[in-house]
Amino acid sequence: MVPTKAVGEAPALPLPARLDLTASGPLRDALLLRRGAALCVDAGAVEHLGTPCLQVLLAAAAAWRVDGRHLDVTPMSEAFSDALRSFGLTPGDLAAHVPGRGDGLDEAETCTSWA
Image (tube, rainbow, N blue to C red; front, side):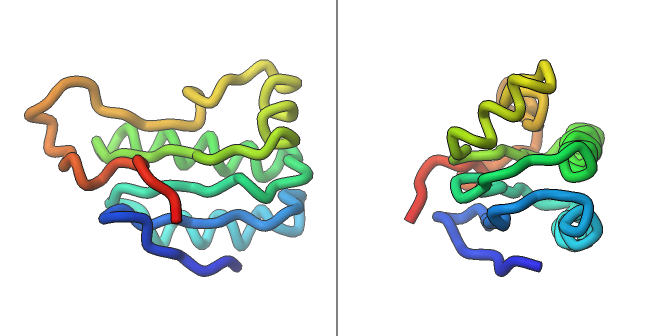
């Protein structure tokens, strides 16, 4: 679907411009390949966010929370953020952050800088 680019120590998964039904399967597959590790999802180029891909992203956030791993969607394009709001969601709904320290989350596994 889309290549992974390195961002600091955490891998990043850049999303395509159009996240519709056609993109939902490849998005699911790309996320499943990365399950179990910290991940930054780059939605900076997204122009359209449809329900099927939103469901995939919400399921990924739930899976990362269960696994106790870090997941962030950042940066977000204006179109992505607007679509998220129209669904009644916030960026936090797509994130998995384990609160506090001593949780197995390495500081290097966060989305702090973008190339």
